[in-house]
Length: 388
Ligand SMILES: Cc1cc2nc3c(=O)[nH]c(=O)nc-3n(C[C@H](O)[C@H](O)[C@H](O)COP(=O)(O)OP(=O)(O)OC[C@H]3O[C@@H](n4cnc5c(N)ncnc54)[C@H](O)[C@@H]3O)c2cc1C
Image (tube, rainbow, N blue to C red):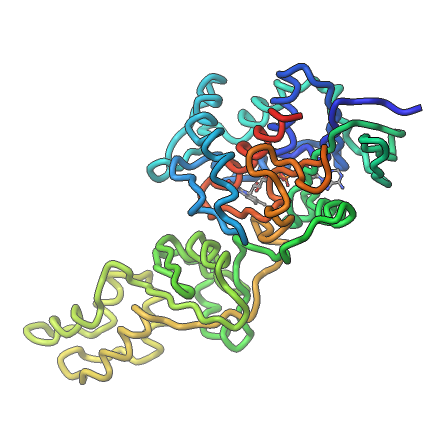
């Protein structure tokens, strides 16, 4: 004997529950299988607990993928304003950290409640693992720890492999492969960088300091905060560059993005009796200024052009090559995933296996930092849910 559903959804994360909510609204009988004891664990910690759920700028250009234009259809049909209207209809207070980037004023719980209210609790099976999935006579048969389940549609909403302690797995990629889908190699993204012990030595005293910087990797530059950590570099500007970084590639970091330090110092060489340290302390915390001076606090009036050039180069154009990323343990997302070339961009259904759907982070669509990934969970989950 097995239980029959219109669709089985694997994963009670944001994309799986948006998908379930949409299908249930249309009268479908849905089972959501979640291998952990709670839903939406990444949403609970997202945006530092305040859930940065969308960004009005979300268009395909903010997503990385082998096929980034794949995101256009779902983002157009289920755009940020629609998610914002949904949140407003649930009277959830929101604020914008920067224009268009929305967070929940009272924390992520309200956003989670909004989603969970739309799904009968009996439709979500917690602590439930699948053992096998087979497709026979247009039905997916799942052998699970709660018995056999069958449905004409199966949605893979198992997310990416980042933050494994919150329940993340790469099981979705294994299932996709089982059904013949191609995988774009996956790797941790929106992730801090490790520096080597030798690189860390002079930076140890800066642990915990955050300052604005423009960080460039290849042709991409992100201006935001940079954080010195006990293992390397983090902060939003660094996480963004990690999306584009490849092994052994240097980062160019401008620690004073608004100021041409060389011109400023040259202008101060005449008429003032300043040591360079006193100028740097106007821009940087004391520990940073001391690290930049490296024990050589010289009189500006006496300094030659080369000396000023060397110091301002270190500040406006600091080059450093991370040894590695901090890996999935600290990555906000997994980049890569199920190749979208084999998925319908309007319905999220597999082009190879009728009835098989993908939504959310398991697919090779990775948003930049700033609410783009939860927006993608909403747009892709709703697109799939409308078609079940
Ligand atoms: C610390 C952190 C902060 C973040 N902050 C933001 C933010 O502010 N804004 C933003 O846009 N994005 C943010 N993200 C990214 C965002 O949370 C994810 O991209 C989004 O939640 C992905 O949704 P999903 O449904 O695809 O996957 P997930 O939310 O990961 O959900 C997948 C679900 O599937 C379950 N699962 C996995 N394997 C199995 C299995 N074999 N059987 C059954 N269930 C399974 C998991 O337990 C999980 O519940 C953040 C991520 C992290 C880690």
